[in-house]
Amino acid sequence: MNSSPAPKRANGGDTATSPSTPSPPPKKIIKARAGDSPLSDHDRDPNPEEKAVDPTHAADKAEEGEGEEEKNDPLRTIEIEEIGDDEEMQTIDLPDRGPALVFGASCAQGRAVIEGLTEHGYGPIYGATRDIKTCDARYAQDVLDVTLVQLDLTDVQALEKVLSETRATSIFLVSTTDMPTGNGDRADFGFQSAEDVECDTIKTFFDTLVKVFKADGLSRHVVFSALDNVKSICYSGGGDPWIEPLEDGSICPHYSAKGRAGEYA
Image (tube, rainbow, N blue to C red; front, side):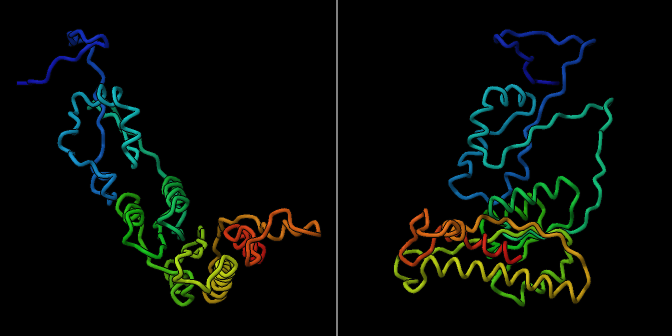
């Protein structure tokens, strides 16, 4: 016996369902994978059972709390419609675009690139990051089905090994400027030093890429997330720069590092 209550009208009144006009299939809120992914404690639902969605009323509840659901769901819960027995499932055959390698897999840019690569038929997808135990890195692995690779770009031997063994023909590179913390633990490491280290690291990446190509002959398409060399631009007109440098002479080091490396590449 079906004990589910009858569907309701928008104004709250009950309505009968005509056998000759079947009601549309209900929507389901799919949270299986999202629930298993490693969210931080403040993102987790403290009472998941209290907020469980009854599939028979999922559509109504999704409409009632749509705004609140999006705000509280960092994984953007997916809504799908159930397919009836008389309907044919439509599938899309994606072209096989080969393996891809994303550096910075645990950052916002890396995640967006991974999602785009997956959507357009790339695979397998490898994600390189310095710490594979972070929530963002584990999300890439558990939800986006990425093969994680623990790698620091300053480790040239490890970088060469990853490029050679993954044989990824599509590569996305985004780097981080390790700014001085200001708490005294890196007193000799200023903003200009941070810029120089990042710039040299990126230049070494491209040098290593050329070395690997000479060894295996495999062409690789690289997208490098770069910014402007702000310091060079500020001095391009001659005279004093139009942005005042910091005490160590640096100007927008997190931009200038990438801009200098991009010019080199």
